[in-house]
Image 1 (cartoon, rainbow, N blue to C red):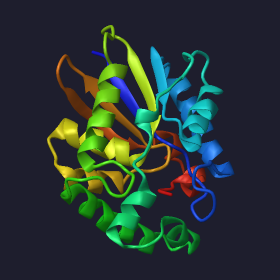
Image 2: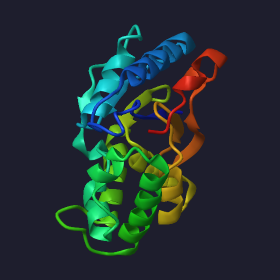
Image 3: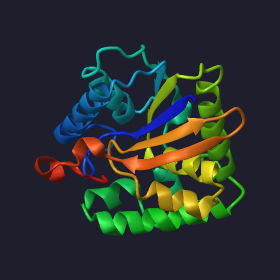
Length: 223
């Protein structure tokens, strides 16, 4: 059966320019590439969103693999617009919340904002509705996996919200499940799905085997 590997981007600069990858994040990506290579894993297709943190994670990962296809940049794998979602909920300015460096307060606000966003039918501000977001990411992944051969693997480097929504769809969970999954994702965490003719089945969620060593414990990050 074909398999889809969803990788969350490496660690960004949480309190600074979020759409970037830190030095530690680049190391996370390198270790993941080495892990894939050691497994002998090969990808028939490779995708990322157009966000810098997504594309850079894929580029750093590919440097440590002998053979990977040229990546396709597909903006449909971009994260939801957190700034618009937070602003519409009245829970604060995204940049200001991150600049404070209080991750707990930030993700508490994000959770509440996502719940409010999923509950409304219209799009907040100039953003997209929850339904639009769902349609965008599910359509993108369906197209990425179309026409695969039985032993093909597909790699998609994306973000936590996209991964959470796709996994929730695979296991039949609703919006709340997608939000909970989103907020659990780790930087360079790997989620594996088996690609069937009409369904995808979850095999593994949010694994970080490339970081599960005593000398890499410091590299386990969520943001």
